[in-house]
Amino acid sequence: MPVARPSHLPDTLKITLWDFTWYTRTGPGEPFADLDRAFAEAVERGYNTVRICAMPYLLFGSGLDTAFLRLGPLGGAYGQRLRWYDVRATTEIDARAHLLALFEAARRHDCFVILSSWEYQQSSSFARDRAWFDALMAVDPEERPRALADGLADLIDFLAAHDGLDDRVAFAELHNEVQAGFLTEGLEGDTVVALRPRLERGLARFRERHPDRMVTVNYAHVPVGSLRGVPRDVDVAAFHPYVYGVLDELLDTFALRDPSRPFPQERADRELLRPGAPRLQDWAPPADERWRLDATVVGLREVYVHDWCDPEHWDAWLYDRYAVHRTAMEQKLTTWIAAAADWAAETGVPFVFGEGWVGYTPLHGTFEEGPVGAAFCRLAVTESAKAGAWGAVVCSNAAPHHPMWGDVALQQECNALLTAP
Image 1 (cartoon, rainbow, N blue to C red):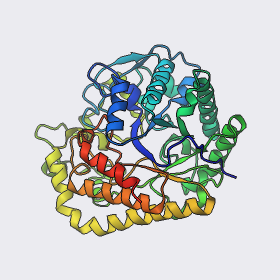
Image 2 (tube, rainbow, N blue to C red):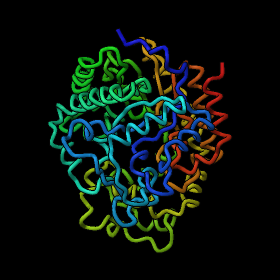
Image 3 (cartoon, rainbow, N blue to C red):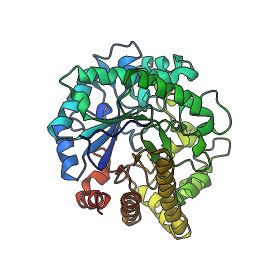
Image 4 (cartoon, rainbow, N blue to C red):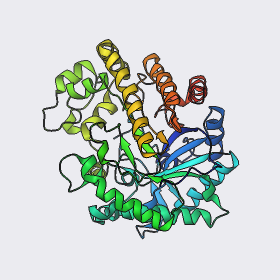
């Protein structure tokens, strides 16, 4: 039987995605320099929950000293116009103390926290040396979900020992988007299906320590056609419905996620890039920082185009082609929401959308924040509420480290729609 939802948690989780940025961008003037301000702004916009990479393996599994954790950019200007990666300066934190500070601020502002991990996707790429990354990769792939489970269990014990701060935990996810990172190393075929035994062992390990805590795993997209691979013993169905559509056409046209195909440099120069952009083969972090390319799942081509595109050209490219994709994108979104709701109903658990809607766009692009993206936000939260979702984001870009945070009215509107009868 799934663990029942604790009575002290909100009826609806209105989620803002703070991912790993809550610890990578803590320097002066950065969005998380003042955690109380970040929480106050979140509450003003209608949120009651933040979703984070809690770095469980680093803090409680790696054996590394995290009292002086140094974090910073990927090197040079690499990634500085890429969402989530535009870390401005090197900073140093006591990582466990920073975790406690986040939970203390959450309590002061009556907010809750979804614990997750991005460690097997990109978290360690922001560290000033590769020790964290090497520690992660040293874990046998078959054991990685169990290692994460142990880290999360220790983390909850740590919070409980500090003034009962574990009461702020909404639920725990073993990892973010489990089929899209280093958790799948060594597997073949349908990764959602192939990964299930590893994840089930991780879930079982967590329950040995915390049988009364809600725990789950999280999936990129809604893996329709592979839902048999989602463990049946999760306590929350957690999915990320990114519909892409017209954005997929751009990715395919410029082979941004397919390094087996030639990159169309001349076409990119004409249609997307700013004057003076270097050639693809000339864009990388400094030589002594290039290990970071191995520590992140975001490929060099995508970073290059996000870094060097003219955002107006990028947006225009999508707007010019959007009409052809609009109906399919809307249908995919509503179908995926319905599929997630159906899977959750069959297994008797609540469902949550901790990320989603259109897809990964450049930092200064406005397609997701503009009229098309805003319409998807409204559609998504309305359909999520109708389907009975326990929680959802307004949009993955609605967080302190994205320009969309400035659109207070849209976030207030969508968070109200999420709880509308």
